Image: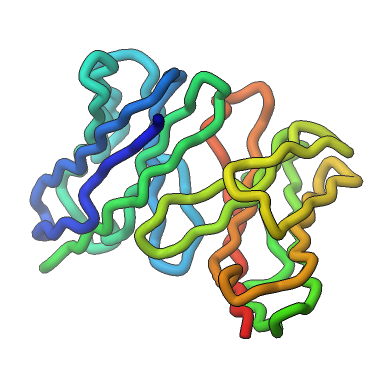
Length: 109
Length: 114
């Protein structure tokens, strides 16, 4: 079967660093995506990993280990506007997106 | 910028009514998708389309149908709304030439069925 797990909720402090983990099980794998979704708004694309390693994009980085079925999203220098849900999704062997339930990130001053 | 619009942000309907949710994208994307999003669950794919007149069932098509008569427009139809279809409905589009998972979403329609 196919399954994606990520923590339901995390809390972090403004200015700090937070790592949001995502583990997955799938019969086929063609890439992993991270999306950000602010409350009441649509998800927006953050990052894409298809090879093992770290992809850095400004304050956000995403890591993938295909052998471990594991990814993380790293957010540095947290700002209040980073309070949002972060959705992990993978494309399976049919190139369909399978979504995790999302991690709600709460930033405290 | 890619823009995906949905006909309504909030909608209240009664059980048994026929409901139309419209989605329009302005970037000439080939692929269009309809999802529903419920608390504690990931986005679930209802239907998708890779071309005009073409439609494919997603994971939860029961109780829904779709129409894609023009490339830019993808409509979701609830033939007879039921209370368990109360949800947030999200439309998305993507380019056939890009990453299949890089989808652009509309603002969503929060549907309440009474």
